[in-house]
Length: 501
Image: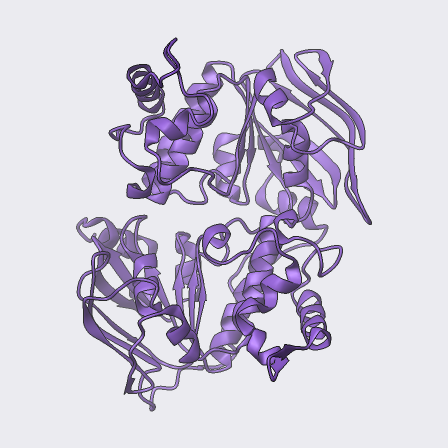
């Protein structure tokens, strides 16, 4: 690591009322993976956008391969050799893989028609290079979220960058896909790429990076070789306090075993899942485990009314419930947090306030007149309770960090105090300290008598929070685990169809 690709000195970015970056200094070398860690709102996303041309810095300098540069927009950044893979996918699902890889740069014949032969050949070379063995004419809507993430990586690499910035690249990936991604990163590192790797997963930081740079409150705290850090020192640098890594436990046995189940599902079947049967009682947390593509999210969406159900029975508190639409589920006391907040839950160009109260306008209205005063009061309380970092409730939610967007959604889901919670990847893209807050909130949901169905790709969360675990494989429930059965080895054995040790 001798040749510097990037030199950042005294980089600052100021928004009205907020100093998002405060004199940031760091270097990136050729053939290096630099990990960047920080809480949500620490400035990571702002830093990426300054490096890629989305934002213009308020002060400081950026040198690229020894020359000071001004990156006026994203096209300038790409032309310079800086490509970004954002946490939120930007694929066009109606187009095929090849068209997504070269989106905005489709090759043309001299006549002006698209050269599909060259497009498909070049796209196949790139996707083979990163190890995604799909037919490149496959529509993106027909492949998994994890495969869509690999398409995003292919799109970035197709621009022949020298610097590749990865923002939470494993947030949508299963174990096998993560291994494939890390093999690709090792390959790119050996080819001389400089890679900035942003992740909240400490095991990934220690597995793949050479050095680690920690941000806190918009300031650069320290940069060290990865072997000079451990988990506790990184977390302490991020939050300036010690964080208990243990999962909170219920203060009492909240499960009501005498009453009928809060939710019963029998024989639920549609194009996404097959013969799903389970029940959950008030005060209970049931984890849905399985590898990516097993059908966990599809179970939640099917019960919630987002997907049409061919056959099966749903009972809530012992009574048959016909749920044909999410509105029916909300009326029957089911709160839903989707894994894809960008597409399923947020109005990105609307304010924090609108996004918070969106499903509950009826609660703030009388005779069809909405009370702005009541909405403002409720939103202010939510911002305070969940410590949402925003200049005001009028801030567009797209301008908040991913973690603070998630806090707004957690606040929204809990506002109606539902009897049943469906939580799909509630801590995806969330930093260590905020995860602790969300864990406590999940425990509180159960202690207050609600039933919680939890989907997460992080096995420690499933093991640490669940009273029971349902393991899915091939779109059906493979096993129900309780007590000492709830272990990583047993869960993965059922999830992968392996033999138990």
